[in-house]
Amino acid sequence: MCLAKDVDFSVCVVEKGAGVDALISYLGMFLSLEPRMNFSQNGNMKRHAPINVPVSSDKFWFLTKDRAFSLPSPFDNKGNYIISLSQLVCWLGGKAEQLGVEIYPGFAASEMLYDANHNVIGIGTNDMGLAKDGSKKETFQRGVELRGRVTLLAEGCRGSLSEKVLRDYNLREKAQAQHQTYALGIKEVWEIDEGKHKPGTVLHTLGWPLDHKTYGGSFLYHMNDRPVSIGLVVALNYHNPFLNPYEEFQKLKHHPAIKPLLEGGNVLQYGARTLNEGGFQIFPGGAIIGCSAGFLNVPKIKGTHTAMKSGMLAAEAAFDVLHEGLSMEKYWDGLRNSWIWEELHKARNYHPAFEFGLIPGLALSALEHYILKGRSPLTLKHGKPDHEATDVARLHSPIQYPEPDGIVSFDVPTSLYRYVPDENGEPRLRINAQNCLHCKACDIKDPKQNIEWTVPEGGGGPGYSVM
Image 1 (cartoon, rainbow, N blue to C red):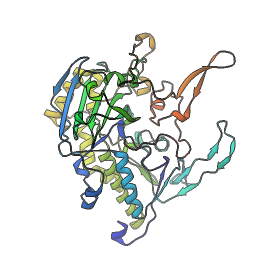
Image 2: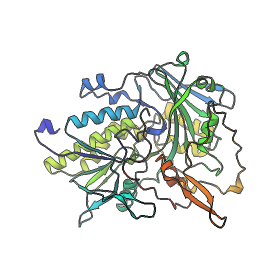
Image 3: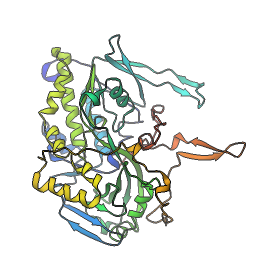
Image 4: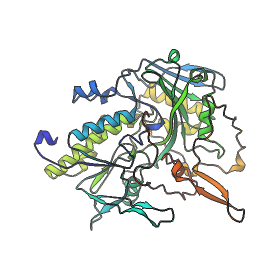
């Protein structure tokens, strides 16, 4: 837009990861990229971008403990591409820098900056070089302020600054939106035997290992060469306090329809991330975009295409703010008139339908998808917020998870929260922050909401490369 109008505006991107792709692990899965995001404005982009594995097979299974029943696939992945989102983001970052965008990886935005009228005027990065007790180490470096006329928050699900802005400006109340709901996606990337690998194969499942009252499902994508991505998505409004999403994922890999694929292979990377569904948000001085706002198509477990489109619409609105003096309300208007609005409106009832249980949820979803096609006159409501949905322990029996075999299932890879005895032998909570995968699930699911997740020093966290 700047090139077309012959103007020069400064665009700055602040990224808390060590690189623009370091923390990219969308939904705990490889993404199936929608054809409507085919970079049609620049044909050369699609030819050179890391987008080269078209979907060749699209299957949907209902799992019991020992069997897999094939169902009609509602995902409509024909024409889609399976990609590594971290690799695509890395490639896009290079293209953005070629156009003059300033990208600063390794800097974590920790606070919003406001003017006297409480309009957002930028962000501040956190101080670096602090000890655990808050004292300054020799490497201490004061955070910096980055001020701009428009600030766009694209922090992903449950962004720390986005949550503050949502509260400060009562954005959910103004939009008359329901409370946000979340799920946790856990993923492993495997390299499997060449004879078992079928590039472009997509599989989604429903049912086992989750109980009939817990919403969720699994995915398995065959990438280029020999990698496959396998994972489990578990809604965080589950009731049983003994349920462990990671252990449920380990059980999944022992299903007789899945285990033979993984045997003989090895894990390349693992990760976890929460995902959300929600709405659209603008505030004085900027906007919340992408998964921070909740642009996820829940039944398709896809949101990158909507996140990218929302970013494009926000960029167009921001350009008009700077160049023509208009307001960010154009972003709102653009969303209402875009395919994002239509797509998310059609998908609004799928998740809340499963509040009634697995079988009623399947029936209502089939009615919504095949008969009403998203045109239901009713909008179903969510149940309790995720942190209120957990029952007291006495209402459930402990779940006995099998021991990992070290071949396809493994022990918990990180230990973030651990009780250790103090000098008097009493249990004391120890937080091993260096093990945090930045999934945000603890912040969301904590029944008392005592946990407030804050950004680490810039460059901290996982360093994904093939996620």
